[in-house]
Image 1 (cartoon, rainbow, N blue to C red):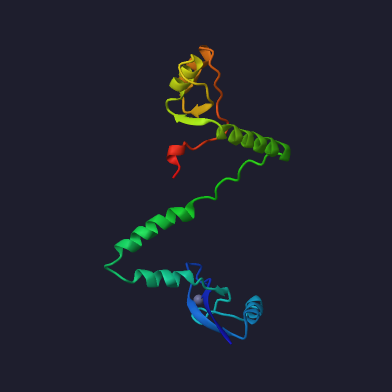
Image 2 (cartoon, rainbow, N blue to C red; image 1 turned 180 degrees about the vertical axis):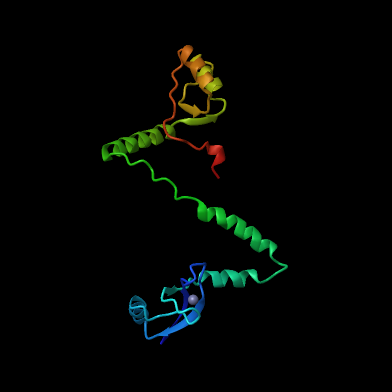
Length: 173
Ligand SMILES: [Zn+2]
């Protein structure tokens, strides 16, 4: 035998929802009796009976500790918005050729940056110094504003944007 927590749909049309226990030979037995309308609510006779969700019981038990409720309330207020959050959008599906191309470019960028020195925010300054021969030439990469990049380009200094987002090394642990 197996016992189920059951709830009725209610005949009064209101919220209904009497909770009661029902004993059955098996889960299949319950399903068969339910389908034939043999399972009825002992309180109102409704045959609209379904298994009651178990979770509310647990939640109620968890909230019974009155007085020490602050932590619980915080947890609930955090959990609720998370439950409401829609699933993150799927990444755009690109055709396989485009994906392969992107992987190639990403790999090429990673390879190129291996021999390149990260100079961070002094990129424009360093690029200029190298261009005007004030410093030994070397591949560098770093951060520059669009304005700085334009100024460099006007001076004839070759700069190219990094195509893929790159975390500055000083932000990597
Ligand atoms: Zn009922």
